[in-house]
Image (cartoon, rainbow, N blue to C red; front, side, top):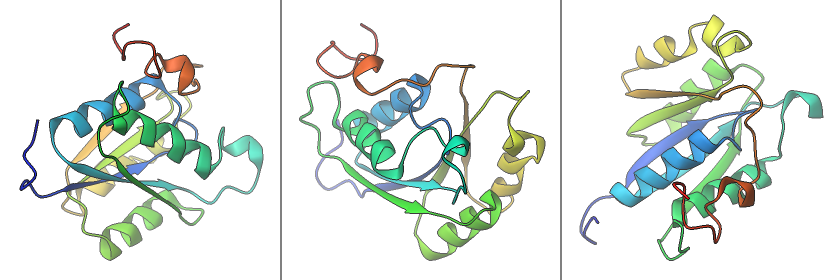
Length: 157
């Protein structure tokens, strides 16, 4: 576990239909356990409820619980923002306004992901920030409670 003097790492998470996937929640838990990390969830401004599976508040709740760990005792700093209709421009703006160390892009599988078809991860890397891509398996969105973190002994249970 990191010491209190370790500077807080800042991670921008970009997701719109994948914030409830086990892989993203697992990655948030892993990163928060590794070192103090502040997470900022950026979602595109979607025009219809069908374009996003969750609200910003629901996404923040799940990410906050994942960052707190299985016991819920780990300090967690999670914020959210709604971007514009274009993911790249929203990420570019967030990076310019915030002091982020890296970006996590959580996206749908390659067959259906517009972000991957438009090569969003490579475009973001060209902005000079490390990028991690988490590709959700089809139909694996779940609530935080269903993920097994909450009172269920962690992700490996």
